[in-house]
Image (cartoon, rainbow, N blue to C red; front, side, top):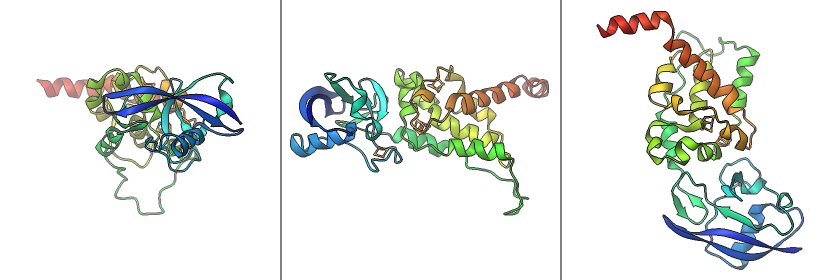
Length: 247
Ligand code: SF4
Ligand code: F3S
Ligand code: FES
């Protein structure tokens, strides 16, 4: 057992401050264990969101020493012996209290995406997919909705005003999944650009770096989606149709 300094954001809404605590840490523990010890021994009203403690529910997202991380999957052993561990709420979303954010922005963006639209002529059981199409969907479906990717993306992290027009990497990935799904009949390229803000993404890859599931969001979802949007934009037939349509 050792004693460590934990610096934790306390407060609600816009009003809050970092508060230092000295707390016991034992071998093998993760940051969430230590936050729970703080709750149990010193700050019973500390608000912390968590559920599975196994990296699978996506609830315990916070920023630890400035890095967006799951607190249940961040081992105390990654910090130096005298390093202060600073835990703050995700910066991109409004704080409800202490380490708990209001992440409803993400659910609103999820609801805006038109549902999977299979060909009505295909009967259940008739459709066959290539293995690579199955694997692509499976990779995207590993998402645990922790929203660390949306939290870290500079398009909304530093620009509140962009939230209305940008779905964030999590939901652009969903648009990409459906757009590349061989049985989805909807053309999602126009709405990816016009309604979900694909053009705001300048491929910084920060979303991919923080994803705890190791999903290659940028390379496997966002770049292919951008290529499809560009193909449509520069397709001579689409250009001709748009030009004639404008006359
Ligand atoms: Fe979290 Fe990764 Fe899903 Fe983004 S894509 S919400 S970082 S699991
Ligand atoms: Fe943002 Fe990821 Fe693009 S961090 S800018 S969505 S590559
Ligand atoms: Fe479920 Fe951390 S508590 S992912």
